[in-house]
Image 1 (cartoon, rainbow, N blue to C red):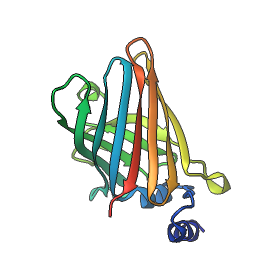
Image 2: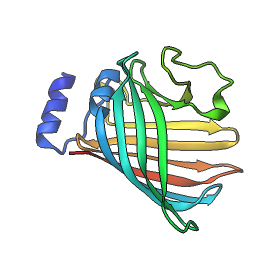
Image 3: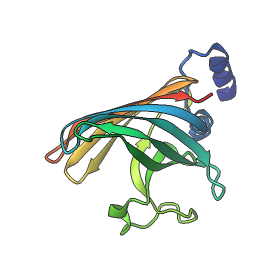
Image 4: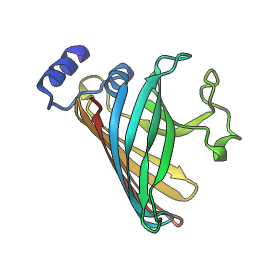
Length: 186
């Protein structure tokens, strides 16, 4: 079933994975990926690029939870030299749809942690609904309202070795987009 479809896609190297449940999403994302992001904010941000590595690693306390750690070098217009960038998210593949959480966001510390068994504070960011059963796909769309600004986006699993995670934000405080391409690290 899922394993057979994923194995066939991996062997061919080009078929889009079908992500029908949390375990399929976990298996797909687990590991290290090279990442390249472009930022284009007309308001509330800047323009630039990030190049680095993103790692999805299972949590010892809760193996169905993947910690996403991104480290890279970011170049932004107006800055004389690149800066080191770091981002951390939590992907709860034990829920369906898969839920993505902020990790240690100082603006969300007043909220209860969604996964208190972890050593970090987690708060809700977005659901990733890839469909389920025969309706499963490699594409999930999401929205997140941050005060008055609406983030809309999608995560597309294009091949077993390549996915994109893109979003745009519009509102009174921000107007921009982030496009990210991930390739499985060798």
